[in-house]
Length: 125
Image 1 (cartoon, rainbow, N blue to C red):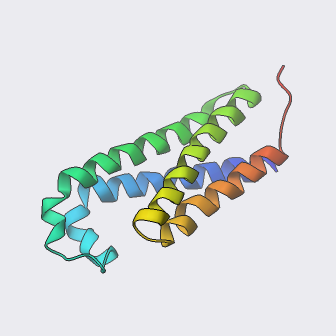
Image 2 (image 1 turned 135 degrees about the vertical axis):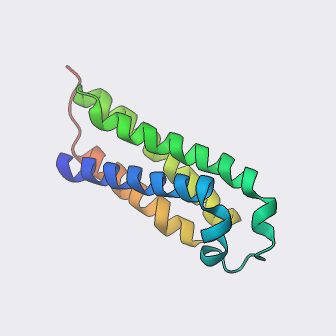
């Protein structure tokens, strides 16, 4: 259970690394292809905003990856759960404000990882 939970944490970290790259470096080129409901002329004017958002996604990824290298299992779980809750909240907010797809891309995997971490609970030493 623990291995599955940590694997999912790593995959969510990779997802947020990709989102960070997308928002920081590919907003004008890939953005119009991904967000087809938005006017393509919107993207050049929102580069700085998207890059800022991308930085936050990079912080989420960094926190998730950090949790994977913590040796103490109790603290590893605590840090992973903290950053997964951040991802969950970001996904819910994104679903409410941008597209419901965000709920499935971010929140559902975060909830699954949180459940797996909870089920693999270890006692502090």
